[in-house]
Image (cartoon, rainbow, N blue to C red; front, side, top):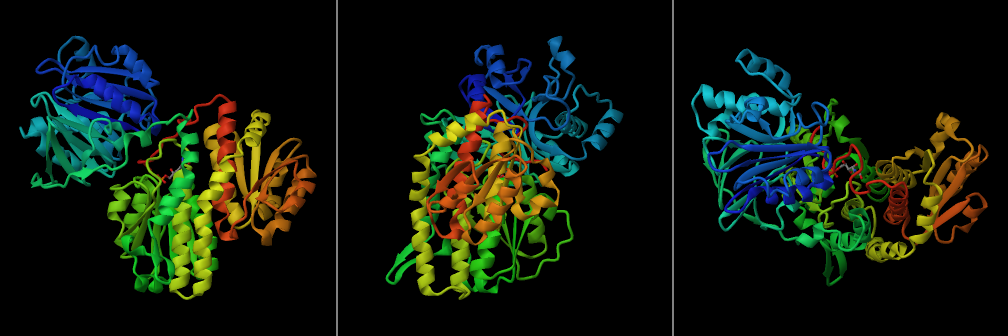
Length: 626
Ligand code: M6R
């Protein structure tokens, strides 16, 4: 989704802004722009459609723009097509004035998020003499800031506060005022923004990697807060314009974690980081005691008393995080005998919620900023229901607002298609399910110990799977021209199918669907024809024969069958044309292993189709709009 970078200090701003925007490319965007101020001279604005490279070339890698303060933006179109006109930064005047070298920009700004009532505000501004050059909600927001600034003759913070009261929606705004050269003003609601400081310099960014090369000392600006950013210092304000104190946080992960480290793509690097992500997540709560190993959820903030009281679980998330929830549902119900409902956050937030007062709402999110998941969390809290976040990004909105947080320890994930964060989320779910089962006396001490022993084997088993990539590469090349693929499975195998199918479609643009295997013959089987690829996921021995039968039904209609199963289930080869085996583990934990070949399949298909693996079209890493 959109990215914001800002700089004020002694150095030339534009190259720093371009460097920061390049680190945010992974978020997905379709145009980019810079605004740089050089003292009292008119602000310089350069925009371009398409890749950041074009903007860098237009500005001679930033060298063509003089000035020590500036803001930059990568836009992922919401209001209006991707074009230079709609690209940010936006100005409070008319850009035509700019061409005549008058300064149109008492106020110039960039924005992430969506202003929901922009049409109504546009009308109000039109009545007050404003005209608009773009289709964006951002131009409306910038003009509204200027309107209040001039109408009431107030300072930037008061003008921003009035704007914040008037707009509905989500925003991270970074704004420069002509009358306040050297300063950047920031306002935030429901869209991430951090401010980094170092000796004599300050940086703003919508995401940590953008400024990690420059500083590790950052402030997290809270919802409905504003900041005045000067070289090397920041002042924070609440909506009443009162100054608020904030703690500096040190980012502990190193900049290399956000580099490719010798891999061709971030996705492949992150696939290989899975053993570590899963092991680190496991060890974050596993303790050695005198009587053996045990799970200690004190860092999560979930007591045994609270675990006993939970009457039902609602797992709420989007995309792959929702797929983790689908797998977790089977595991929690089976091990801990707790009723579970898994819901898409975009649905949960808009239905009448009849939640039991002792329910636990579990929000799963890598970024911790997904707009629908955040809204679902707030809705549950509004109803007085306890919330638990399973979150990868420290300091993110969901992590800060949930009652308890289980941090996955996957490190920064850059590729749009999630891999290591998904695997770490699965591990977090296993640990919770096993602990719930033990505390609620659904399993005895021996079973508890056995599950923990088995969980400790998973990272090495994932590593073993990664040693055998070549067959999948060959298979992907063979099917790179396919049009449709169907993933089928039952129970946890259905959850794995959902994730395998999403990995395939989001980066290889090959149409694929995941179906509960038994559901296929209720309509979808009519799509199976000569050569259609059907991938049967067969890791659950109790359901193995059933799914094989469904695969055979597809074969009878011409499908090419791939089987994905555990070592030992060699009879699958009687039906399947191509089989991939994964190491054996407890059936509850099979998703952690079976997903790896499917991630690799999606990856290799994307590569063999010549696509941009890390930045697939139309997608964004962090979906901060609904
Ligand atoms: O940051 P989140 O985990 O909340 O993101 C949820 C989804 O947007 C995300 O999993 C998405 O589906 C990925 N592109 C899947 O690879």
